[in-house]
Length: 211
Image (cartoon, rainbow, N blue to C red):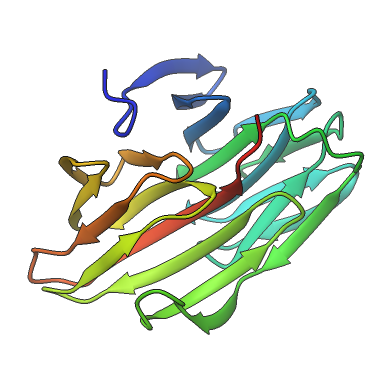
């Protein structure tokens, strides 16, 4: 199994289908939440953040409830902060979350709106949300365009929402599409190329590296 292009493990929790990826000490999960499904309040030692990709989900973080709209907000729940969700709609909801031991002394329970910006690497129009232990960036990659070689002291997980994209990490190349991810460890050179005829939506979750 490739470290840069991990495979997933299927998990079923009540009416929720989960595809879980292990990226070193980071757990990334896609979730498909059936109509009427409820994920009860729970807590764990890892901090967790997440976002809705399609549908509208009520998220409860430490008693604060908010409806998340697709690609517009992220939630963040610190270590041992109770959180859960309910799908009140008649359609399945597709979303993702990221869990990690952050070693932060925070009881963070927040909802963060994404704000328009320009990607510092590509200058493509983007949206950004910054939490205490992560940065989420959504970028539109036009047809035929590429993201130049990048290398930083942070780790990065990338998700394609529509279309497909060729990703190169540390000399290993693979095409990824919806339902797949890439993982770029700290200090490893990585880049991407949209070889399709349609604009690709790329979500990047950037996490400062810690040992």
